[in-house]
Length: 147
Image (tube, rainbow, N blue to C red):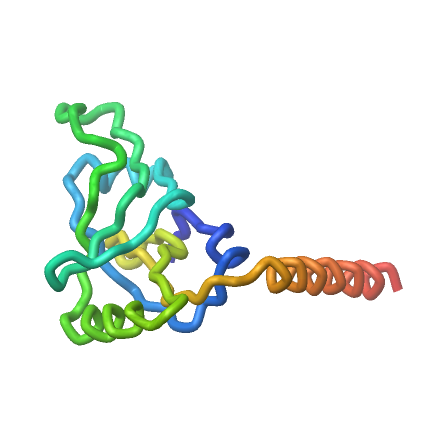
């Protein structure tokens, strides 16, 4: 498994409750570009339309050696999930405070996969608490390393 893009902001802004693996419907030159690491999911989000899931705002830089250069880098891409998973995600998303966020893009067995998470938004005090715990953990690790 080769990690191609990571969404650190999602872990900072949300509590991730469940994770799912989804395939992406891509055009040929997009696959080459993603495998080269030219992808960003920081600003992207996931929504449903007519019983299907789509990722919006995922930026894939056009592949330099491709002949079809007129592809929009931030076009909407369809997620490939089982119908049961889609229905489960849509049902949980309708609950208050829940959203679906992309977590990371990776290559597994030659295929591009997107890990998505069912997430609940953090309040400001939750974010501060998370940062404090992270900082305390770093201090402890430094102290143990120097000891």
